[in-house]
Image 1 (cartoon, rainbow, N blue to C red):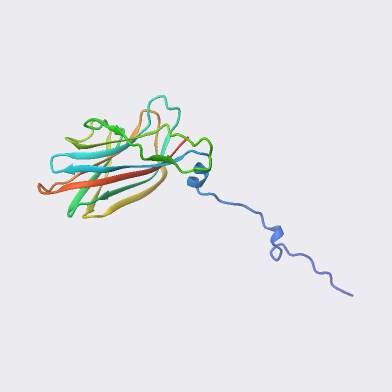
Image 2 (image 1 turned 135 degrees about the horizontal axis):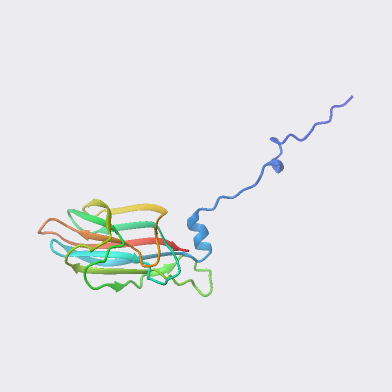
Length: 183
């Protein structure tokens, strides 16, 4: 009498359920919703700060999800980066042209509704809003963090990074970059 072998579920891969986990950033990029941008040559000193922010204009129809930010400084000494939620920044701002969709396969390419604004050599800190956290950098270093979209700003909201120094002799030249998606 012969024994007929049965296909055991654990010995045959056909019995395993198949699933694919796609990182949220890739998912949003594939949909044309993920963007990157930077503000370069931000000058700041003892009395003059610099900032860059992601600003979600009123009426944009999207929520802003902050994924990643970086702050790079060309200083020889320490600097401070303050992170503000929904603050009104000091000075006159410019809109960065260094913004792009990350899915360059789409035609036409996606255009962000969120604006990356910046200013250099401004006095003071943002008004209103919330100074949510502060990071200190040392010398020619880069601060970076991945937020994974947990910082969410509706239309009219903003995520701002303010750069400053406390040493009278220091003059900084910095760069702030962001990665975000819009839904």
